Length: 256
Image: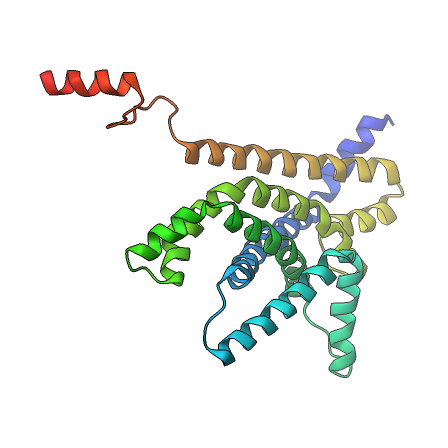
């Protein structure tokens, strides 16, 4: 039997397990990325908020900043595989032997890990916005929260979209480490198929191809979304004082 025939037979025989693994992998990666982005937005807003004049609020803000800084450093400075073991078995230790459901555990682990990276991505995105926009919003009576959610965050989301897309792709691949606690993602099923078929190389080649198809497809879809958000390049800035084409366009419109 040829090598390629072995690969085809693995796909034909074990496709239910492979599809289940792909589904769990995408579910965990997508949920973890969305939840991590929410964590990043929350922590980014807190860390960039101005200190209040109220003494109690100022102290509380400093404590929150310190907690967020520790969270970010710990989860960015340790491998997600180790985090999975600590969170999953740490809960079992604290609860007297009870363990969390595996798929929700995987979502939780990926979410808190992604949140630590998103926190810095969002913070950098907020800092990159020109301070004049903050001052302009404040000058018309907007509060800090109104400024953040109505003026700053929409721009930040557009600016950090490539980084968020990159985190999503990374999460698709990094879900493979969750097999250490028994999460039934794609890599976990690869181990089962390998032990049943005794065809190690062929099995992992199929799984490698599946990971590539997932990441390649997601990357292209997200790039398409980025281009859609960019809008059309052929536009005219009406009322421009420096664009001669805009001035001609305005004159023609007036004459018409």
